[in-house]
Every structure is written in C-alpha cells, then in structure tokens.
Image (cartoon, rainbow, N blue to C red):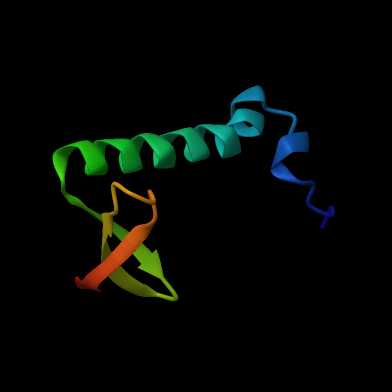
Length: 66
C-alpha cells in the first residue's frame, strides 16, 4: 500500500481544495448562527453538542448535548 500524502498534495484538484472549502463552510456556519441567534451542532469527542456563538468574543459557548 502506498503511503498517503497530505490532502493538499492530492492529484485531484477538487480534493486539494476540499480542506480550505471545509474551513470556509465552517466560518460561514458560525456567521449564520450568530446572525440568526441559533446554535451550531458539532461533534466533540464523539458527543453531539449544541454551541451558541457569543457575539462579543465570537467563541462558542456550550449549551448542552443533543
């Protein structure tokens, strides 16, 4: 089996750009959650958690588990 290269070195251009696209999508989700005052549902250590985005600091404030 061939050793795996970092995703940024993949032969497929779509795959190479996927890491950056995921980061952009995550940032956009945070912006929408802040604007609509809704929680983000994320998985942390295998547990689904509802995070509310604080408008002051822009950091998630854990509200509870899903």
